[in-house]
Length: 337
Image 1 (cartoon, rainbow, N blue to C red):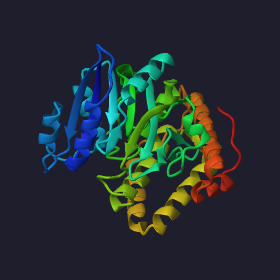
Image 2: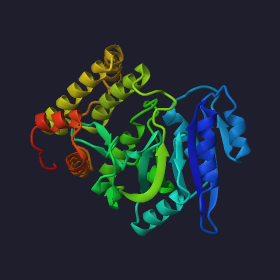
Image 3: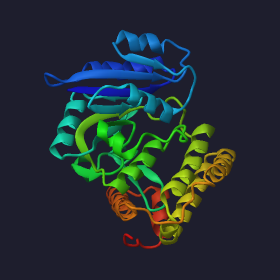
């Protein structure tokens, strides 16, 4: 059996080195081969030499074509029955891959994801799986918090993180590849919404550990990140929320977008937020849909369950202001269509 690992990358060769060293140390069962593919978005440092020194195959795009494009190229170039997606700023525990393979097989899941710690603050979580609220905004469960009671429990999930997750190859044949209109950020959330509507459930395995630098390439709260996040939230709503869903979830959607705007403005990124909003509205003008599609009831049910996870973790670990105000202002949940 072959497991391919796809790493989208641009510069920061030292980060790539750490990720590849952690892959070299993976404790795999006999008969499991590792196929590592580094998709380079036009690096100007020694990244290609680092990839070659660890036996990784490098696919050169020549210039920065975005994360989604790099992921799609890497998946197409990979040859494994399983495909792991890995950020270049992630380090893995030696048994990370073995645990995810076992969890996916045991639970007959389409993908598996594990517990990720903040590399700069290893006592805090980067995320214990992803979740999405009715308002269409995603959160890494437990982000910035100590381990909660829920972070050490195996559970089903519909929202894989491209930070560090393992997929059956057939997942992408069923759900489709990453939307290349999402240059960076939330491309995995968009795929997760497709997976939810198709019933392609995954599993969260808390013993599969990783450590994530977080926005090490793009920078935390940069203009680019805020612009992408704002634009892509609008695209997600346009692609996945029918008129019926918007009527049911209109207040949570409005609350989520207003709170996001206030957060961006408070970080001095009003211009980036406004630019992203304009771009999202313009680029989504042909995407808004009225009809209810097959699988929408499953999607709504997944969003309701996912929002409950957010509330549970927040209640256990302490409320962040954003989520405190979201749950105060969003009206009570409505049942699935």
